[in-house]
Image (cartoon, one colour):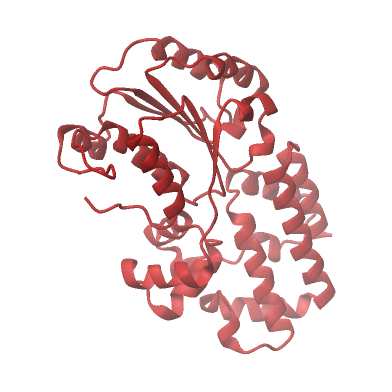
Length: 318
């Protein structure tokens, strides 16, 4: 079966070599922005390990019983663990520890994919460390995070780290045209909005948001008390921070009289044209810098995301 992963060629090649040489580590940490493809690659890695067809280099054949179970989401030796509510809780980690000591049911290894591990509380992470220090030989833990700095140094040191990067905008736009039948005039705008992340772009396509994205409320809100409600929205939808920068950029282009073809959200042009006169060039530039600084702070440090987003929203509404 043809490798279904878009991009991340070096990582895929490394994982295939790992399986071919049977040097699979006990724990991996996949690091990269939301929607960049970490979970998709983690699932493919699991399928490479489970596939019953022996090929060189290893591939997921897509036809054996193990591959069919993977495709249907019913393989008994793969478990995906997501945060329960806003956090990954200690109870979830303890349940993992109860299960991981048992031998795999069908495959050579049991694989656990833990999503958004930056959302573990301290108690849960300290509990997970015990398993990372001495993982059972027939198990693989794959941790996914968009913020490696939010994890303890000891957690990071116990894992083999693979760094995922977004695709260049034009490369992603070309893929959207060729493989997802997105119109060329929309593909670049969609690639920019997705910040180069193929998963984020696919989500926008599936949601039908290519044309229907609404102007963010924070661009038109004037009540400072709304900052706390808006901060909660950004916390629950972190990918919208990158999108917000693009909206401010559109305002800057309009405010400066740039050619209309430079506008990303062309379907909201009328509303943006009515908003632009209320902003000065300096205010828009400061807003863009504020959003970028906040995004970097959340992704690269162990800062309190709620507090950082509240400060950001207060600045934007000032």
